Amino acid sequence: MKVAFVCLGNICRSPMAEFVMKQLAQDHDHHLTVVSRATSSWEHGNPIHQGTQDTLNRYGVPYDTHKTSQQISLADLEDYDVVIGMDDQNVIDLKKLSAGRYDDKIFLFCDGGVPDPWYTGDFEETYHLVTRGCQSWLDRLKNN
Ligand code: 4NP
View 1 (spheres, rainbow, N blue to C red):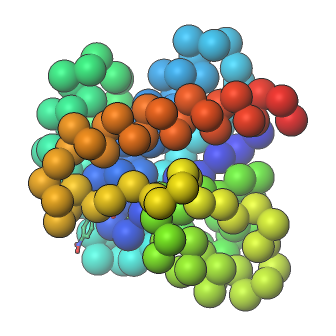
View 2 (view 1 turned 120 degrees about the vertical axis):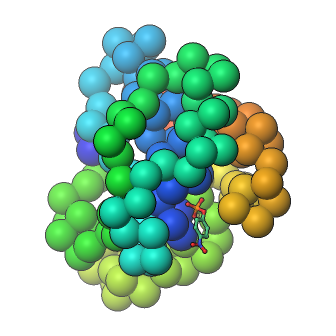
């Protein structure tokens, strides 16, 4: 199963989800391919936000220090089995890109979405929502 987490910039929320999910999947011996992407090109090539890096370090979640922001493409929508937007706007933007072709693969991460720490500054809140949501997605994907 191939999973892509998607947010606006691919530097705060979706990379956090990518690496939390990778750790959870490994802990549960569940094979998953996990990546993260941006809906926008704004942060293209930029590294994971320091706030996300600090939070992953604090909770002992390993991550790829070389990961940089990458915008989602139509090829990604075709390639991945499940494409998960971190908030409602991300889902709207993904459906715009999909234009009806891959809508059945596009989901919202959790009810209400994950508020953007780029604006809230609250990476701790992000981490708690992300870990809870990833656990729930892992259970859901395991049963498929
Ligand atoms: P993310 O956060 O979507 O969680 O990666 C953001 C990162 C960058 C910007 C907005 C949100 N930005 O405006 O550049």
